[in-house]
Length: 75
Image 1 (cartoon, rainbow, N blue to C red):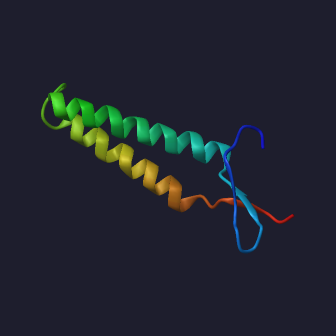
Image 2: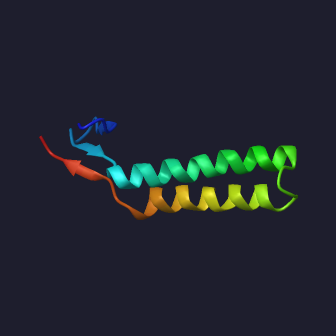
């Protein structure tokens, strides 16, 4: 549906998909998590910058996943 990944429940046959803005925000958080992890591993930008970026990115991704509900469609 409009390029969005959809899942169907095997029990109730409902389809669910993630809000497009929520998916973009979650992907941004995951990208920040990845970049911060690489920065921390190679100690780029100091000792604190990389892990702090990774922590903030992880918080954004998790908060987006839990705060914005998925949309349900019943056939």
